[in-house]
Length: 171
Image (tube, rainbow, N blue to C red; front, side, top):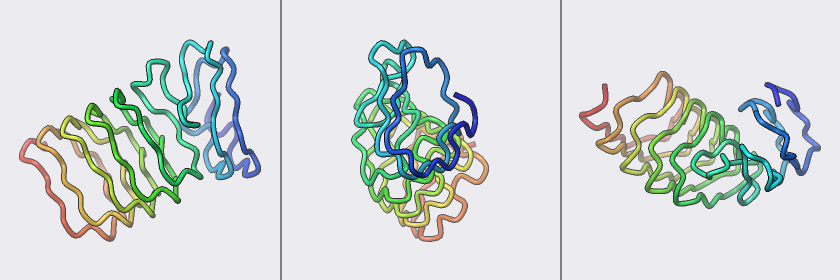
């Protein structure tokens, strides 16, 4: 499913993905603010759905969360929050990231302006560009000692940040 395939389909409520879907662009459902849940056919060899969100088949990578979500319980084995996974989830206020998470890709939390609290697990090694841009509700952010890369514009317009801890390992 290509970039912007369903862009701004604001009346779309539920998305059912068949076993034949082999690729979903991170922009395929951009600005579809009415989606309540994504459902993936259990026979799909590439994707799965948990709690209305799209994951890799092995649940180690999160691809897409409905923009309407206020909270999200992420599986413990999650290793990667994919590009734009939480992008424009403007109702999301708090999120607990699993301890095994090691990568946050580009634009992962872009525009989550109500997000107030987020824990960054100690195993995080890289944070993609614009990952938290527009998260204007975050006040405190502590990056663990394993973070090696902070990318361009990661925290643009995070106007509420008062406390920021950057580890010595950052390049």
